Image 1 (cartoon, rainbow, N blue to C red):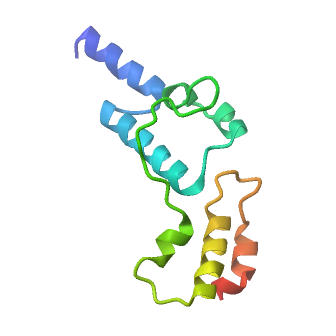
Image 2: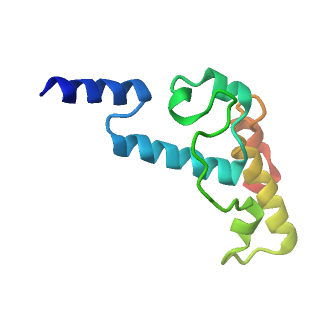
Length: 118
């Protein structure tokens, strides 16, 4: 491996990826999560090991391609045969499970006790 290849590999590892494809896929994953679940809380960004690879110093995503945000409710309406009230309850339940901030996210015990999960 050349010195340049070694330096490139080291740079990617410092960014939190094995290669540029990993870096791009990780970023895409963060974008899709933010589109569905909302922005990443500032304290989560501040605690992230590789925040400089994906976030600006102010906590905003470094690159902001146009991705249409989709609500959980919209996703649940597609091809599902639930009633309107069941869809609303399902959306509320799934939203609790997909909350980014672990301090706010529904615990496993609370999820199992939820009326929609039974």
